Length: 345
Image (tube, rainbow, N blue to C red; front, side, top):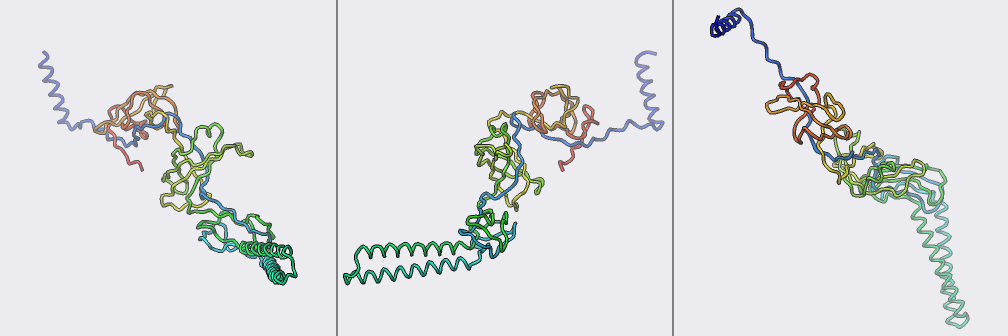
């Protein structure tokens, strides 16, 4: 049997097989996968810190003079308006001090008036009248001080804000200047207070941009900026306090929310990065990934990896920014397999 006869015979057998009901091999269905885009990121790992949200301005409010607390009009966590009455002292002692100072001032004024009349009649000396004038001025000053203390025997909200802490209760004796309430001024914005180690504090500078996430608002990212860095460590914890001004972007912040801040090094060199979950057959700096090419086909690509940057890894060779790598479903793929990309959610 020559070559042409054998080829015709083979074709006839194939046709006969089809006639006997045999079906061609089924086409493999596209495999569902999730992907991530190759991005660029700073070559140094971003600084991460955990802190709490607080109003930018906290005011510790107290009475000018000591006394017994008559009333505390607000509760911790309550929102207040500028000028709102927050707390008062018992007025008996304060009113008595004002009455005494007023009586002394009125007597000093009468004494001065009488002395001036006697001076005109040449009965009193000029020195005596000058002493009476001095006593009158002192008495008037004491009255002004008593009135000032009376006005500050009540505490009013200095601005719109929220009561952060309530440090006294009615009928409690407080000293002059002892904090009674701590009010946060929400009109001045919000900050995140975070603690840094000595290794991290030297990497941060005022004005650096940051990104903040809150467990209370999952999926949202808030822009922030470093506004203050402590010059000395806390003697109890050994850490350095950092403050970041954060933009609520319409979210309703409250004091005490747990915040996670990420600060990138603006001067760091940018490198290509991919999620660690996209790497296959990693051996030292060598690994493979599946890249989704045009037409929805997975291509197996060898890559060289560098430093680990959080949950991502630096790619030194093999990938370009913008390419899509498979992060879920790669274990069941072969080179040139068709894939179906699932939504990120």
